[in-house]
Image (cartoon, rainbow, N blue to C red; front, side):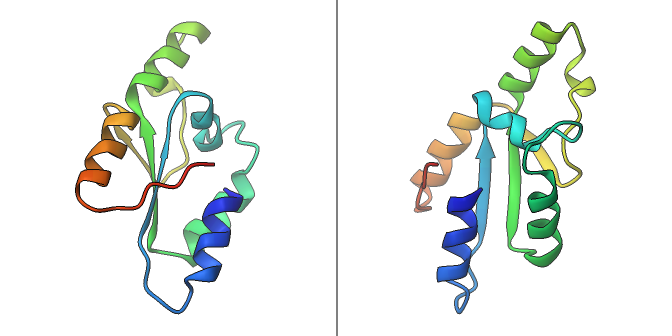
Length: 103
């Protein structure tokens, strides 16, 4: 999250669209009930409409299995969209010319 905020501040003059794709342990960032950065996510979401969040559906399903829940019981922040596979989403964005920045 710090990387995204730093990038946005550096490029504030330009209209930069950022898509944050969360998978594996990173999906915990988008969990509505226990995200360690929930307040920061809310602030970014409210103040920067050009920032979006994608949650890996495969990771969500794995978390649900390990917690004895259904995938839809893994609650995500309100503006997160679920994609089938986060890594595939990153590959597709890269192929379209997006810059991929890791943590």
